[in-house]
Each structure stands twice: as structure tokens, then as C-alpha cells.
Image (cartoon, rainbow, N blue to C red; front, side):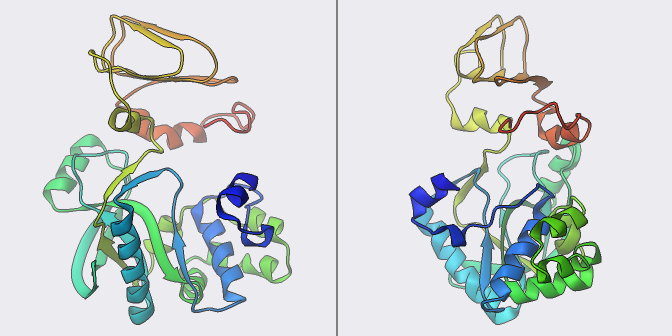
Length: 287
């Protein structure tokens, strides 16, 4: 919170910090409920912190035009990205019929959301013209809450806690669920616009191969890392030296409290891994 305040100059009252992580659906519902208290027509833009976007001007122009689409057509809007490769680490969108175009924002219906596929399915999605789901969303606060009440009763019935001012009880009553699964996959008001900018999700370790320089053997290393007779490894260390010898295509991450080793092929599935780990294994602040 303090870092955000320093960077933006926003007061404490402008920051909503979720009391516990329950996925994107509950926290975005809380944000919409809070905005509705001021104005139900407020348009919310949901942005992740771990994206690389360039150029920024095109990004800002697309968001501005997308706000008009949301307002004029009463939509839940996503921003989709034209694939540059088969990518198992991303969710995919099946684009449908055209709705409208405002400036740089060409809007189409979403026929289907698809979860992160295996590599063979990802290749099929690229061939069929599917788009990447960037996770950038826009909608009016009032419309989103209506869609939650209609399509996500597991969250909608917990809104009584917010009405009583008990935010912690609201989060405790909600399931751990993404906004894609809880609302977007169920609503008939979902549309998408194609990104007019370059985009990369650097929330995955594989992204280091696209944002950091590799050595002559394709190893990407951050921190005190030494690779001998190894190729194509991704290694990140903030907890001391890491040495790899005679291994290829691994992802190795070392922090002060935990070390993770997996293959680059399996690294997009880390969310599934976290479901199987004991709650006390990862100390606060670990990735």
C-alpha cells in the first residue's frame, strides 16, 4: 500500500486491500460494490501488475475507446491478444460475431472461454483463430454486480456481509474462484476487443526467456547462478547461489525460504501445484 501511495499520490481511502486471497471474482465484486455506492455507472478497469505492454499510448487509447463500448452497449468486456505462438500457459477466447467498433476498439462477442490447454490443444486453438485472454477487463460497476447476482449466487449471497460492513466475513463466505469461471463463462453479455499493443504476461517464469537475455546455451539466469553443461534452463535466485550441472530445460527458483524445481514444459501449471502444497510451506512474500 505504501509503495502505491508513493507512486500515485492516492490517499488511503483509494486503496482496497483484500483481507485474504480468494481469487479474482470476490475481490472484483468488492470493488464493484464499493464503486456502486458512489455511482453504479462507474466503469471499472481491471489490470494485473505483471504485464509488459508497449506502446503505452496504444494501450491507453484502446482502454478509452473500450470504456465507450462498455457504456453504450452494456457489456462485460475483455481485452484479447492475437497469439504469436502456441501457449499452454494462457487461457483462450473463441471470438464470435461483430458488435461494434469505436475508434481503435473492434468489439466481438465471446463464443467461449477455454482454460489453459495442453500444448497440442494450444496449437489447435491457434489454427482455429482463438485469441489469448489477457485478463484485462472493463465493465460498469452496476452491470457487473447484476451479473454476479444472476450468474454467481455463491458470491451474490455473500453480499449481505458487505451491506453490513463486514468485508472479512464476505471474503470468508466466498469460494476461491476466478472471475472468468464465476461470471464471464456464465454471462451472455461478454465481449472482447483485440489488443492494439504488444503484450506479455510476465507472471510466468517462462516469460523470463522473452524479457531477459540468454547465454550462448539458452540459459536465462537472474541472481547468483552458475550453469555448467546445461541448456535452456530458467534460473532465478534471491536466496543464495544456485548451481546446475548437466541438466536441460528446467525452471529453478530459490528464495530465502523455499526452492522449487520443475521442467519448463510443466511450469505453466504452477497454480495446480499450489493446490497440493501445505498452507504453511510458502512464507509470506514468496512467489
